[in-house]
Image (cartoon, rainbow, N blue to C red):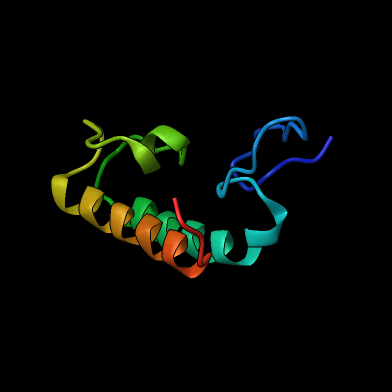
Length: 86
């Protein structure tokens, strides 16, 4: 079974998901590196896991609004770089 950057098994019977499709692996890696750098730089004593919820939720209590804005910016840059309509 193939795993994505987010470590979730891919299901070939489901519609293509930008967060898991191998076609967008390089763009996803850039986004994940940006988010990882941000998460590692946060002053929180707990370690944050990069999950779909962190990327897609409107707000996450574990991070500041400012950091959440940067995460969403990285996500939208990723979506834009895929040149897909959603």
